[in-house]
Figure: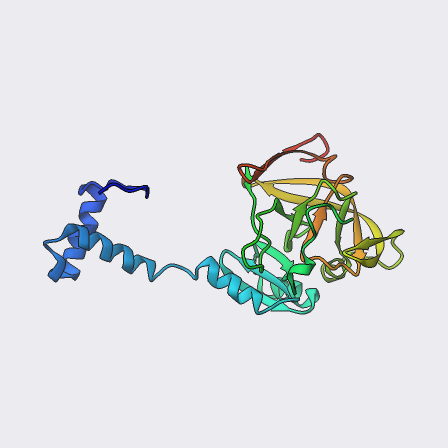
Length: 116
Length: 138
């Protein structure tokens, strides 16, 4: 069917074949449909992903005005005081990817030009 | 190349050139900063300075600045800063202006202290930027 969406080719060989064979044992009702097995594998894998970035953004918005430390898509610590966040990282031996203060509103984001 | 990102904690929004900068010697706090050609220097939160143990009392002060409509007191402290570029740490010494209060969610990396330590290639259409360290950043 014509489409503008990206297409992917998967060949039933090697690692893919092994995964599909295992999937066929787990879901015998789909054993005759390798395409359905592939989709079921993908759906199952998706359920085991770490929390999505969107979840983190929603979590951050609940902490407007707080200092936070994040790693990947995980919120490590949030507190109104930077000192508490830094102390928590130090005490727990945790490494963060980013430390920042969550905007309390869009007005806290500088405009297109420099502000200082 | 470093991809632009939206300011975290905002609902989407325009992706910007953000970069994590370590101000503390233990590389414990990767402070999110905006690469900002319009900023005169490196401007960070004084609250964060206190949290990581940068001594501000007695530090030289500069004339107050107006940031986001708020008058801020400026403490100027020379610090060893570092960033991770392609998995490799690059460190340099810079005069940092710690501002009290600091109304923005991130610091600013501006002309003095940052743009004189790095050549910065910004590819706005591709929403990415590249840092090349000059002699004083290793």
